Image 1 (cartoon, rainbow, N blue to C red):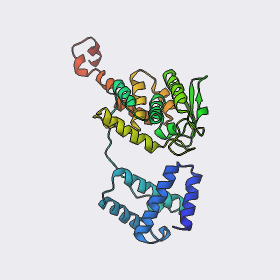
Image 2: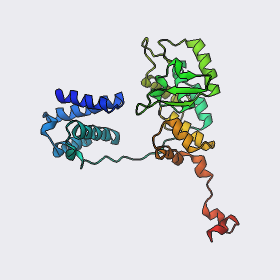
Image 3: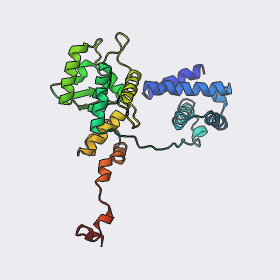
Image 4: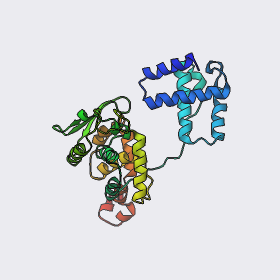
Length: 285
Protein backbone atom coordinates (compact mmCIF):
# COMPACT_ATOMS: atom_id res chain seq x y z
CA UNK A 1 0.00 0.00 0.00
CA UNK A 2 3.05 2.28 0.29
CA UNK A 3 2.17 5.87 1.11
CA UNK A 4 -1.47 4.93 1.66
CA UNK A 5 -0.33 2.48 4.37
CA UNK A 6 1.41 5.32 6.18
CA UNK A 7 -1.61 7.59 5.85
CA UNK A 8 -3.94 4.94 7.24
CA UNK A 9 -1.52 4.21 10.08
CA UNK A 10 -1.48 7.91 10.93
CA UNK A 11 -5.29 8.09 10.89
CA UNK A 12 -5.54 5.07 13.18
CA UNK A 13 -3.15 6.73 15.63
CA UNK A 14 -5.14 9.97 15.52
CA UNK A 15 -8.30 8.01 16.39
CA UNK A 16 -6.40 6.58 19.38
CA UNK A 17 -7.44 3.02 18.54
CA UNK A 18 -5.94 0.08 20.41
CA UNK A 19 -2.61 -1.26 19.15
CA UNK A 20 -4.16 -4.62 18.24
CA UNK A 21 -6.95 -2.90 16.26
CA UNK A 22 -4.35 -0.73 14.52
CA UNK A 23 -2.34 -3.80 13.51
CA UNK A 24 -5.34 -5.86 12.37
CA UNK A 25 -6.90 -3.07 10.27
CA UNK A 26 -3.63 -2.59 8.39
CA UNK A 27 -3.19 -6.34 7.94
CA UNK A 28 -6.71 -6.76 6.53
CA UNK A 29 -6.28 -3.88 4.08
CA UNK A 30 -2.91 -5.21 2.90
CA UNK A 31 -4.51 -8.58 2.15
CA UNK A 32 -7.29 -6.77 0.24
CA UNK A 33 -4.68 -5.00 -1.91
CA UNK A 34 -2.71 -8.22 -2.52
CA UNK A 35 -5.88 -9.99 -3.66
CA UNK A 36 -6.66 -7.38 -6.33
CA UNK A 37 -3.08 -6.18 -6.98
CA UNK A 38 -4.38 -2.64 -7.34
CA UNK A 39 -4.37 0.50 -5.26
CA UNK A 40 -7.55 0.92 -3.16
CA UNK A 41 -7.88 4.38 -4.71
CA UNK A 42 -8.55 2.66 -8.06
CA UNK A 43 -11.21 0.32 -6.66
CA UNK A 44 -14.73 0.69 -5.30
CA UNK A 45 -17.72 -1.14 -3.85
CA UNK A 46 -17.70 -4.06 -6.30
CA UNK A 47 -14.04 -4.84 -5.54
CA UNK A 48 -14.77 -4.83 -1.81
CA UNK A 49 -17.75 -7.16 -2.22
CA UNK A 50 -15.72 -9.51 -4.41
CA UNK A 51 -12.98 -9.71 -1.77
CA UNK A 52 -15.45 -10.31 1.07
CA UNK A 53 -17.11 -13.07 -0.96
CA UNK A 54 -13.64 -14.57 -1.46
CA UNK A 55 -13.10 -14.62 2.32
CA UNK A 56 -16.44 -16.36 2.85
CA UNK A 57 -15.55 -19.02 0.30
CA UNK A 58 -12.32 -19.62 2.19
CA UNK A 59 -14.38 -20.29 5.32
CA UNK A 60 -13.87 -17.01 7.20
CA UNK A 61 -15.99 -16.82 10.35
CA UNK A 62 -18.18 -13.92 11.57
CA UNK A 63 -15.43 -12.30 13.65
CA UNK A 64 -12.95 -12.40 10.76
CA UNK A 65 -15.56 -10.89 8.45
CA UNK A 66 -16.37 -8.14 10.94
CA UNK A 67 -12.71 -7.22 11.27
CA UNK A 68 -12.26 -7.02 7.50
CA UNK A 69 -15.41 -4.96 7.00
CA UNK A 70 -14.38 -2.60 9.80
CA UNK A 71 -10.90 -2.21 8.32
CA UNK A 72 -12.18 -1.48 4.82
CA UNK A 73 -14.80 0.94 6.10
CA UNK A 74 -12.03 2.80 7.92
CA UNK A 75 -9.76 2.80 4.87
CA UNK A 76 -12.39 4.16 2.51
CA UNK A 77 -14.44 6.20 4.95
CA UNK A 78 -11.58 7.90 6.80
CA UNK A 79 -8.24 7.66 4.99
CA UNK A 80 -9.56 7.89 1.41
CA UNK A 81 -12.57 10.06 2.38
CA UNK A 82 -14.84 8.01 0.11
CA UNK A 83 -17.61 7.13 2.55
CA UNK A 84 -20.15 6.38 -0.19
CA UNK A 85 -18.04 3.44 -1.40
CA UNK A 86 -18.60 1.52 1.85
CA UNK A 87 -21.90 2.83 3.14
CA UNK A 88 -23.81 -0.06 1.52
CA UNK A 89 -21.37 -2.74 2.73
CA UNK A 90 -23.36 -4.57 5.46
CA UNK A 91 -21.98 -5.59 8.82
CA UNK A 92 -21.80 -9.41 9.05
CA UNK A 93 -24.17 -11.03 11.50
CA UNK A 94 -22.95 -13.96 13.54
CA UNK A 95 -24.54 -16.24 16.12
CA UNK A 96 -25.09 -14.59 19.49
CA UNK A 97 -23.90 -17.03 22.12
CA UNK A 98 -24.44 -16.52 25.82
CA UNK A 99 -21.12 -17.32 27.52
CA UNK A 100 -20.88 -20.08 30.10
CA UNK A 101 -20.39 -18.69 33.59
CA UNK A 102 -18.44 -20.60 36.21
CA UNK A 103 -19.95 -21.07 39.65
CA UNK A 104 -18.01 -19.86 42.67
CA UNK A 105 -16.72 -23.36 43.45
CA UNK A 106 -15.71 -23.93 39.82
CA UNK A 107 -13.83 -20.63 39.77
CA UNK A 108 -12.00 -21.48 42.98
CA UNK A 109 -10.98 -24.92 41.67
CA UNK A 110 -9.84 -23.45 38.35
CA UNK A 111 -7.62 -20.77 39.91
CA UNK A 112 -6.01 -23.35 42.19
CA UNK A 113 -5.23 -25.56 39.19
CA UNK A 114 -3.11 -22.95 37.37
CA UNK A 115 0.45 -24.26 37.53
CA UNK A 116 2.24 -20.92 37.01
CA UNK A 117 2.04 -18.65 40.05
CA UNK A 118 2.43 -15.52 37.91
CA UNK A 119 -0.38 -16.54 35.54
CA UNK A 120 -2.54 -17.68 38.45
CA UNK A 121 -2.21 -14.28 40.14
CA UNK A 122 -2.95 -12.45 36.88
CA UNK A 123 -6.13 -14.53 36.44
CA UNK A 124 -7.10 -14.07 40.08
CA UNK A 125 -6.66 -10.30 39.73
CA UNK A 126 -8.70 -10.27 36.50
CA UNK A 127 -11.57 -12.11 38.22
CA UNK A 128 -11.34 -10.15 41.48
CA UNK A 129 -11.50 -6.76 39.78
CA UNK A 130 -13.25 -7.46 36.45
CA UNK A 131 -10.19 -6.66 34.37
CA UNK A 132 -9.52 -7.61 30.80
CA UNK A 133 -6.55 -9.97 30.62
CA UNK A 134 -4.51 -7.33 28.79
CA UNK A 135 -5.29 -4.85 31.60
CA UNK A 136 -4.22 -7.31 34.28
CA UNK A 137 -0.98 -8.14 32.43
CA UNK A 138 -0.05 -4.46 32.15
CA UNK A 139 -0.56 -3.57 35.81
CA UNK A 140 2.44 -1.91 37.41
CA UNK A 141 3.37 -2.16 41.09
CA UNK A 142 2.33 1.45 41.72
CA UNK A 143 -1.16 0.74 40.37
CA UNK A 144 -1.98 -1.17 43.56
CA UNK A 145 -3.19 1.42 46.09
CA UNK A 146 -3.47 -0.59 49.30
CA UNK A 147 -4.22 2.48 51.46
CA UNK A 148 -7.33 3.43 49.51
CA UNK A 149 -8.26 -0.12 48.52
CA UNK A 150 -8.11 0.62 44.78
CA UNK A 151 -6.46 -0.63 41.61
CA UNK A 152 -5.62 1.99 38.97
CA UNK A 153 -6.32 0.61 35.51
CA UNK A 154 -4.36 2.73 33.04
CA UNK A 155 -5.42 3.20 29.43
CA UNK A 156 -7.97 0.41 29.26
CA UNK A 157 -10.23 -0.08 26.26
CA UNK A 158 -10.80 3.25 24.54
CA UNK A 159 -7.58 4.55 26.13
CA UNK A 160 -9.47 5.38 29.33
CA UNK A 161 -8.24 5.16 32.92
CA UNK A 162 -10.49 3.86 35.67
CA UNK A 163 -10.35 2.69 39.27
CA UNK A 164 -11.61 -0.69 40.49
CA UNK A 165 -11.80 -2.13 43.97
CA UNK A 166 -8.85 -3.90 45.56
CA UNK A 167 -10.18 -6.96 47.34
CA UNK A 168 -8.73 -7.58 50.81
CA UNK A 169 -8.24 -11.22 49.93
CA UNK A 170 -6.54 -10.26 46.66
CA UNK A 171 -4.22 -7.83 48.46
CA UNK A 172 -3.08 -10.56 50.86
CA UNK A 173 -2.51 -12.94 47.94
CA UNK A 174 -0.54 -10.28 46.03
CA UNK A 175 1.68 -9.64 49.04
CA UNK A 176 2.46 -13.35 49.38
CA UNK A 177 3.08 -13.51 45.62
CA UNK A 178 5.43 -10.51 45.82
CA UNK A 179 7.56 -12.13 48.51
CA UNK A 180 7.90 -15.32 46.49
CA UNK A 181 8.30 -13.95 42.94
CA UNK A 182 9.89 -10.51 43.38
CA UNK A 183 8.66 -9.30 39.95
CA UNK A 184 11.10 -7.19 37.97
CA UNK A 185 10.93 -4.16 35.66
CA UNK A 186 8.15 -2.42 37.57
CA UNK A 187 5.51 -4.79 36.21
CA UNK A 188 3.28 -6.53 38.74
CA UNK A 189 3.34 -9.67 36.61
CA UNK A 190 6.71 -10.16 34.92
CA UNK A 191 6.89 -12.05 31.63
CA UNK A 192 9.37 -14.59 30.32
CA UNK A 193 11.31 -11.81 28.57
CA UNK A 194 13.36 -9.69 30.96
CA UNK A 195 11.85 -6.28 31.53
CA UNK A 196 8.60 -7.19 29.78
CA UNK A 197 5.19 -7.90 31.33
CA UNK A 198 3.37 -11.21 31.23
CA UNK A 199 1.64 -11.63 27.87
CA UNK A 200 -2.10 -12.30 27.48
CA UNK A 201 -1.21 -15.29 25.30
CA UNK A 202 0.76 -16.86 28.16
CA UNK A 203 -2.27 -16.42 30.42
CA UNK A 204 -4.58 -18.01 27.86
CA UNK A 205 -2.30 -21.05 27.53
CA UNK A 206 -2.12 -21.42 31.31
CA UNK A 207 -5.92 -21.17 31.47
CA UNK A 208 -6.33 -23.90 28.85
CA UNK A 209 -4.07 -26.23 30.84
CA UNK A 210 -6.00 -25.49 34.03
CA UNK A 211 -9.41 -26.16 32.45
CA UNK A 212 -8.14 -29.56 31.30
CA UNK A 213 -6.69 -30.29 34.74
CA UNK A 214 -10.04 -29.71 36.48
CA UNK A 215 -11.94 -31.39 33.60
CA UNK A 216 -14.12 -28.33 33.14
CA UNK A 217 -17.00 -29.03 30.74
CA UNK A 218 -18.07 -25.42 30.31
CA UNK A 219 -16.67 -23.32 27.47
CA UNK A 220 -14.27 -20.79 28.96
CA UNK A 221 -11.98 -18.14 27.56
CA UNK A 222 -9.76 -15.69 29.40
CA UNK A 223 -12.48 -13.06 28.91
CA UNK A 224 -14.81 -15.44 30.77
CA UNK A 225 -13.13 -14.38 34.02
CA UNK A 226 -14.47 -10.87 33.41
CA UNK A 227 -17.91 -12.22 32.52
CA UNK A 228 -17.92 -14.20 35.77
CA UNK A 229 -16.96 -11.09 37.78
CA UNK A 230 -19.90 -9.08 36.41
CA UNK A 231 -22.40 -11.93 36.68
CA UNK A 232 -21.39 -12.86 40.23
CA UNK A 233 -21.70 -9.22 41.31
CA UNK A 234 -25.15 -9.04 39.74
CA UNK A 235 -26.21 -12.25 41.47
CA UNK A 236 -25.07 -10.96 44.85
CA UNK A 237 -27.13 -7.79 44.51
CA UNK A 238 -24.65 -5.17 43.27
CA UNK A 239 -26.31 -2.28 41.44
CA UNK A 240 -25.84 -2.58 37.69
CA UNK A 241 -24.65 1.05 37.49
CA UNK A 242 -21.77 0.25 39.83
CA UNK A 243 -20.92 -2.78 37.71
CA UNK A 244 -20.91 -0.50 34.66
CA UNK A 245 -18.28 1.77 36.24
CA UNK A 246 -16.14 -1.15 37.40
CA UNK A 247 -16.24 -2.75 33.94
CA UNK A 248 -15.42 0.54 32.23
CA UNK A 249 -18.47 0.37 29.96
CA UNK A 250 -19.43 3.60 28.24
CA UNK A 251 -23.06 2.50 27.94
CA UNK A 252 -25.32 0.79 30.49
CA UNK A 253 -26.65 -1.27 27.55
CA UNK A 254 -23.33 -3.09 27.35
CA UNK A 255 -23.47 -3.94 31.05
CA UNK A 256 -27.11 -5.02 30.77
CA UNK A 257 -26.01 -7.98 28.65
CA UNK A 258 -24.91 -9.67 31.86
CA UNK A 259 -28.51 -9.74 33.03
CA UNK A 260 -29.10 -12.28 30.25
CA UNK A 261 -26.36 -14.49 31.68
CA UNK A 262 -27.44 -14.56 35.30
CA UNK A 263 -29.10 -17.95 35.65
CA UNK A 264 -29.90 -17.32 39.32
CA UNK A 265 -31.92 -14.23 38.41
CA UNK A 266 -33.79 -16.17 35.73
CA UNK A 267 -34.48 -19.13 38.03
CA UNK A 268 -35.68 -16.83 40.82
CA UNK A 269 -38.23 -15.09 38.57
CA UNK A 270 -41.79 -16.20 39.29
CA UNK A 271 -43.80 -17.39 36.33
CA UNK A 272 -47.27 -15.80 35.95
CA UNK A 273 -48.66 -19.34 35.94
CA UNK A 274 -47.61 -19.70 39.58
CA UNK A 275 -49.57 -16.56 40.46
CA UNK A 276 -52.91 -17.65 39.06
CA UNK A 277 -55.48 -18.07 41.83
CA UNK A 278 -53.22 -16.51 44.48
CA UNK A 279 -53.39 -13.20 46.32
CA UNK A 280 -50.32 -11.92 44.42
CA UNK A 281 -52.02 -12.89 41.20
CA UNK A 282 -55.02 -10.62 41.81
CA UNK A 283 -53.18 -7.78 40.10
CA UNK A 284 -53.47 -9.75 36.88
CA UNK A 285 -57.25 -9.29 36.97
